[in-house]
Amino acid sequence: MWQDVRALNATASALMALVVLACIASGVWWVSQLPMFTLRTVSVESMDGMPLKHVNHLTLRAGAAGRIRGNFFTTNLDQVRTAFESVPWVRRATVRREWPDQLIVALEEHEALGTWGEDGRLLSVKGDLFTANLAEADEDHELPQLNGPEGSEKEVLARYAELGIWFAPSGMLPKALSLSSRYAWTVTLDNGTSVALGREQDKTTLKTRVARLVGIYPQLASRLRDGIDTIDMRYPNGLALSAAGLKVAANAGKPVKAAAGKTSNSTGKTTSKHTQ
Image 1 (cartoon, rainbow, N blue to C red):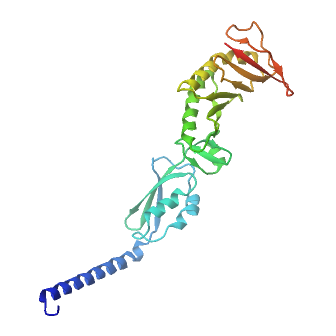
Image 2: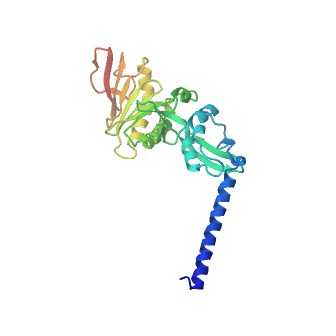
Image 3: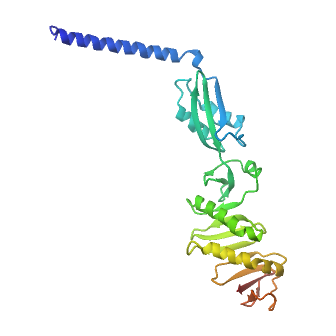
């Protein structure tokens, strides 16, 4: 080998290249550690340009700022993004560097639509579950109570929006919606009435039952001025309801007539079944 001039030259060139690369790497590392590249500013902005409602300087400092490590060159942007996304109310974050000593963080906030289940979680308008201060969420608007099996959040969210449209002609709005483990729907209206809509037999089942209730409700309300506690719409051509002091006149209103005898319970409420 020592007599092979070409091999010696190649080895020498390779060693020289390694030395040069090591020097360059050392130089880059040394430059990157200069005080001028120490992170001095982390700027936070909204992704959509609108002011952030729930995320403020104090929550960001407590939840994310203390977890940023490194300088302009060495900080891990994925770790910074994860740190900001762990802050309450933050749905999504993006992070970019801005020369020579700044990070720009863009945040998207959750927008709470309602509460979910009984563990204090919130459901966003995009169907995401998240944990935050319920008192802060209530500041925007009264939150409906939503519930359903695990993984049904987006389905419940979509159905809640549809029910709001279907009940709108009656002047009533849903304030709670529950999907049981057997996939039966129950909606509570803003007047306190609980309506059992049952399971969906096809795509029009619920809409048809709501339309039937909306059509007959004015007559029911005129006779039951103390309010209706529950309405069961699972009957194919009628309904069952319970209310305090229920009285149904036999000849009052042709579209609705008593189809079964009234039964009273110990609470003073009366249950009746009606057919059209």
